[in-house]
View 1 (cartoon, rainbow, N blue to C red):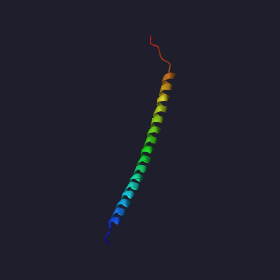
View 2: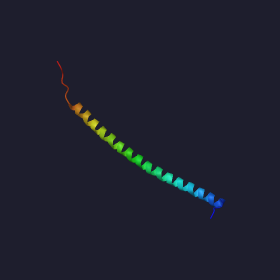
View 3: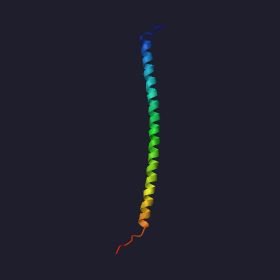
View 4: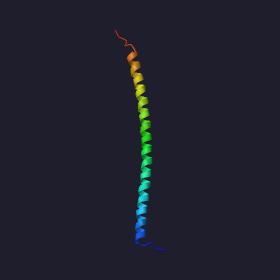
Length: 68
């Protein structure tokens, strides 16, 4: 059974809409992955900051030896 012009046009429109929906789904999944990576990077940066603060505090507490 051959499709007439309306059937072909409808098929093209439905196919295009399906491709758009699929692309949006992929974009949402990628955005979630990027958000997760950003969250992990933020956690790492916070850990590094805490360690730097510990080092700065420990250096500030040490008495400076005078050399004579």
